[in-house]
Length: 459
Image 1 (spheres, rainbow, N blue to C red):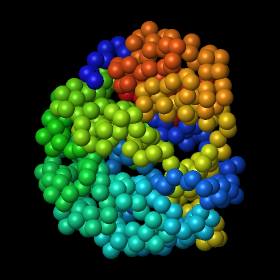
Image 2: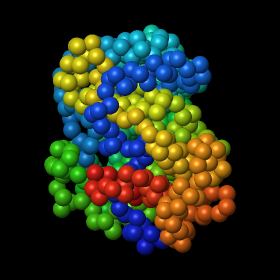
Image 3: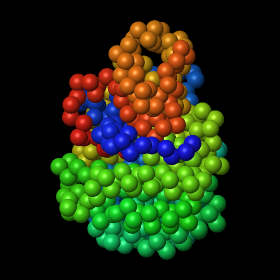
């Protein structure tokens, strides 16, 4: 796949839109979905005889300092003793989960996110993993990943993570430029990141990811080109390239960013275009959305073989499976339901103190939701939707059911983003760079929702 997006297309599709880590998206969750609904879903999974392995997500909210761009649910503190209390509540939540789910469920994917998971000490991480292994059965060959702030680890700490069973790391880099780092309150020398990535390779981690963000204050197309050159020299297995979404009304830390220092829309598009050229020119495969991977990485292989999946952590090689979300604000999916835990530590702890699971909202998917989810995920993951497979699975006439959507696709087809024929919808090479815009056509909720400012921009 070559990078060939005309500038007029980039400008036209520089609009807000969902990332579709789920459909319907998390902003559609309702408080009418309660703990009782979640427990019912767990019971249905337990009663099923063909349950696939689980995915686990554990949210560790603590950070020692705030990064001004951050939109994550986090608690800024230097009091590391707070982690011990949090781990006790996590253990209590897991005990409640397995009470309804059953002990020993197979797990093929684990992700520790945050916040900063490496805020925890080595001993606390060991306690966390020991607790999870007591209640779940971790499958050999699974994906076990952890997000790492380079400022919080050494080679010895990476060895400790490997000993605990983690086989994938994700380093938060964002930008190597010292002025940009200072502007977002995240100073970490490039030499430190290079040393850690090299150490991770020596230790034998299967995949190392690096996160980058374009659109940060003081970034210019020229400065970001230098960061891209350093990233290509670093050559991580995977790269996640995100567009910064400046939403200070929603995310308080972003109010510390000087708006006048943000790059213009034109400069952001130039950074995106240069990123595509630089990374793909260096041999990276554009997996989709914000993800790049080296050709032999499992994510790139899954894309080539049509085995790509998508969940709340983004693209995944693991089969579509139920997800247990653990910790404050964590999101899960069981069967045809989504659920989310309490967003504050106080509420999270209070519910667990009452002996209740900390579910505060969620969604039971309708038949139409399930149909549209299948359509959107086929487009987002395979870049292709075959009418017959959807019709057989959902007992519909696709062209009749989605007549309005197919009319909208005619415009995207005229711009070279999709091709529609008698067999189905096929995303073109150019369209793959703008696949969120194609998926949005089938999002029923967006028709009645004019407030798209809550989403990040799609490019």
